[in-house]
Length: 299
Image 1 (cartoon, rainbow, N blue to C red):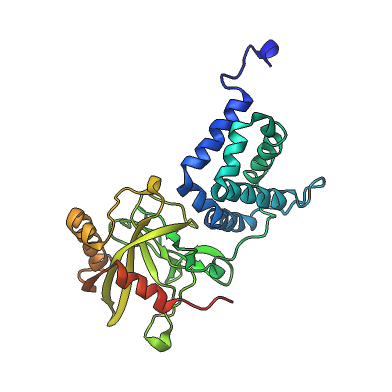
Image 2: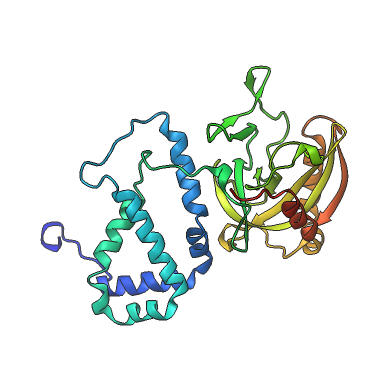
């Protein structure tokens, strides 16, 4: 390559592997999102939505290569995360890296090129909690007005319909990423509305279909058309996705009171002048209790 193109790498293979492994060790939050399955669920859900517009193709050489490599990388990342002493031996003994780097690079490349032929994850089967982390599924990106809902029967995200047309909120755009807590259902027999528990995730705009671990800040209790309606308020668990970082509802109220009032005003007026009544705010413990209350049993 140096002779033909006049180019040569500034970092050698062994040093590059050391730096890569060190990055994984120093970014455990990112690893948590990968090993929890949340990132894979998001990608597979997005691929499923693309499937109707694509032709299913089977690789003639590696018909199961993508899924096998996906599992390989997940196992590799889990080892990095949970077996740090062994990983450090890989960093400091370059001879071990020579036989692994090629396999790892190829598999990571294949994972990044997954096709719509992969079996999608049914978001409706995701649990509310993945380990100690609470998950959220984003339907409506922050800063948008199109009302999008997840359809459990088709496993797709579709615009909500009103009088045969896509429903668009005739107000300011959503002040956060709006979605639901998977693995929850507000049972009508117990006073619920028959839908999963709603959540507003405060962060930069996230694509429809994103599945991410969150940290609860509190809950806004509303009365909509005479019925109580609870909106959980949260931020991403990953620090790199946070635009604000209060530790609890008290800090959120004291340090970000303006943001709290913007959210309150938005929900009170987005359906019309005081069409929704603000009942009260509750803290993060109440919000978590709501998740537990409406959590459905695993199949």
